[in-house]
Amino acid sequence: MNLIEAGVVWTSPSRCSPLDEITVEYEWRGLHGQPVHLEVSDAAHHPYLTGTFTSQNGKAQTTFRAGGAAGVHHVQLWTVGPDGREYRRHGCFRMDVQTSIRTDHAVTNELFGYLRDGLSQTLDISIVDGKPITHYKAADNTRQNMAYPVYAIGALRYFIRDVKSMFEALFSYQYPDGSLPDHIYSDDYPCPRTSRRLRSCMADLEIGAAVTLCSGWQAHGDGQWMDSMLPKVEKSMEYVITDPVTFDLKHGVIKRPHTLDEWDIHFTPQGQQGNMINDKSLYVIMQGDTACMYDACRSLAQAYQQLHNDRRANHWLRMRDHFRRIGNELFWDGIKYRHHIHLDPFDHGDFNEEDQLTLSSAWAITRGFADHKQSVSILKEYLRRWNETGDRFPWWSLQPGYPDELKYFEPVEPWRSTQGYYANGGLFPLVGGELCRGAFQHGMEEVAVTLLADLHFVFKRDRGALFTWYDRQGNAAINAPHNQTNHDAWGLSPWTQAVIEELAGIRSAGKCFEQVSCAPRWPAMSCHNADATAHFPASDSYFSYRYVLSDRRITLSFTGTGVHASFRILLPSGRTCTGVNVDGKPVSFDHQMVEQSEYVVFDLPIRGCREVICDFQGVCHSLQADEPPGAPQ
Image (cartoon, rainbow, N blue to C red; front, side, top):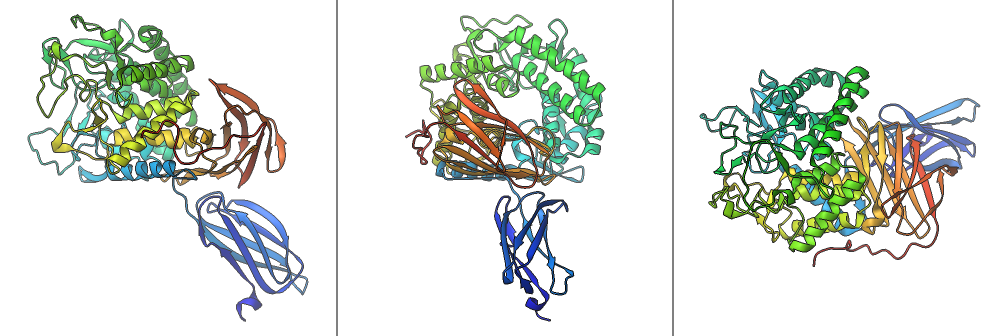
């Protein structure tokens, strides 16, 4: 019996991405115009499409969009044969998923490529106590040091499968009192005189690890693993809020030696005192530590809620609220956050430390520590100083840095921390990325797009590299030439999040994209067409959409592995939504204004492949799809 006699199902293409069109052709001599029934199941064996179409003489054909779980999808067709009995045939195709962004805007496509490829250049696998550990090279540290999951998991989780082992290594070296190291060296580290683990004067190690461990868990969703790690995390958090070296009982917040914001550069009026706490340490309470503590408590509360442990979730919710309230009372000055408050006397001479704008100000926005009004105020202060100083980018570690005449830092290479250098006023991409995220979140999309244009300029100029810091003229600078890295994950991570989570607007609201926030902001980037997929390889979960902006409507097709999606769709400037249809049926919606930006807001279940149409009043002005506003010349 040949294929046509038996009946054969062809699928084209045989390999695809989410929302790609799949054509199914059914060839069988028994087809004579009778209806053919179709069922398509995803790789998790969940049917996501059923339908009926009509055959012709010996053939039947239909087209649909692929969706649901990644992997091999099964196509089942059945009809009634000439003998009156049901006749079934089967086919299949493979749907592959990866984090991707493709638009009609060349700069956006190129920028995403730089970010994706740069992150891949930071990755390494090292052996710690005989076990392979996936990690990334952290800025100006040696490649063998892997105790910094704090800074990059938010972006790396979109591209790597192993987001567990670096945390397992970190907590395996936890000290008996619950504290964590900020240096852990692999088995092949070449210096036998250096301890395998070290802890500097940084105060945010434990709280930062709590935040990023929860962020990594969102990507893999392994509840048993999380249950095994949370007691260690809680022990580290207990250390932070009980040890007199790290906590100030008078104010009820974390304390640290007098450092350059969150950096491990400790100094006194007599000058730099190294990186470790010692008997000369003079203490401060610092806004960034309090905001990070708020973020850690928020992250742990969310994790416990998803693990159905209401008692611990409520504990961390109360702690979250405490740190946000008391931190804002202590540090908010009406325009921005203060750098820090001195616990020990420290004479800065005529220098007005209260005027400093610090890198933690940008984090305060994206950590949710600052409310909307405060966030807009901080962003406007960055813009004011950017215009006033004429510095190439507003990515300051400190603005202004501590003046050279105070003689806190010796002006010697390579560890130069004089004013305008490194953490004492240099420009850090990690700050710019957080500012970009914050601007998107708080209705200042045009500012965010300008910042993205600046980043694209840097990538193009520096052959796709992104360094740890830049001087005030925007030139790449090196602080540790013996450990130079051309691809700094600390800087790449927030910019990647800005593109995936804010511009494309896809964010997992819980673990594994079960609940999705979808807030596409493509009008800000002058994009008409965009395909966006955010994928967690650790769980093979994802959310994907295709977006088309025309003169009078936005059409958005979407699919994913989750259950529910909350949409906040940015309208073109000056336009108002007149109706939302989902799969051809009208649904209710709300309007939300964020500054001058109008969003259309509604919720939908994720079920197979769906299509949303948002109609709006008026005609959208012609959009330019070549350069975003504010792009440097």
